[in-house]
Length: 216
Ligand SMILES: CC(C)(COP(=O)(O)OP(=O)(O)OC[C@H]1O[C@@H](n2cnc3c(N)ncnc32)[C@H](O)[C@@H]1OP(=O)(O)O)[C@@H](O)C(=O)NCCC(=O)NCCS
Image (spheres, protein in one colour):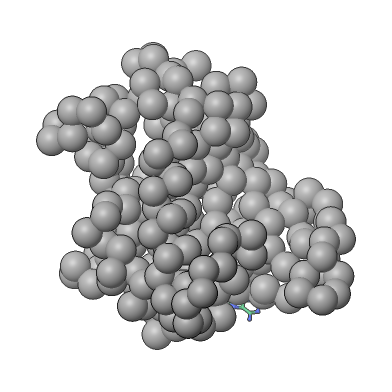
């Protein structure tokens, strides 16, 4: 263990030639440089008097610091940097609210445009689902995407998530439909799980999730 006080940073997920590692501050300049133009950033982020690219960079930094700085057992979220041969391809987020009680995780992700449409979105989601279901004791995973985000919905449906309702939400100046999906542990197992995903560094990080060494 190299991060005695924040052992989360020693987590590693590998799947084929992809490696997922919790984001560290040294990744941020690269993340800002690669941020896709179509990514919707947090609309409630503070807008300082700066140009748009600088605003994007500030949001990335503040969300990174908020993620670890406000982490509690009841509410945690973190991004994993997805790399192939050291090259950053995107970020995969994993989030849990009241996780020791609800045993439910939420996810979101993005990839650089050149890496899309080749199955990497599915692979990185499977990697964090393996962490959640097989190592943290999750009972369900949920996710949401705008009705016209076919790639994101495609990842979820293809992995075995089921419909979990819709919400009408304000989006820009109008109203749009957010589609919700949910996968249970039974769905995960019947879809075959992820025996090809290797996960290391979990036992040391369990206290951060409010979990002990033995999972239910
Ligand atoms: C969402 C995202 C991470 C998905 O990654 P990806 O690598 O492009 O997706 P994959 O190649 O793994 O494909 C996923 C599935 O969706 C399907 N799919 C992809 N694009 C699709 C489209 N336009 N219409 C229908 N299905 C589509 C694929 O066929 C595949 O399913 P299959 O394996 O059963 O054929 C990526 O597209 C992205 O970064 N988008 C921009 C950011 C974003 O919107 N993030 C989600 C916010 S909720």
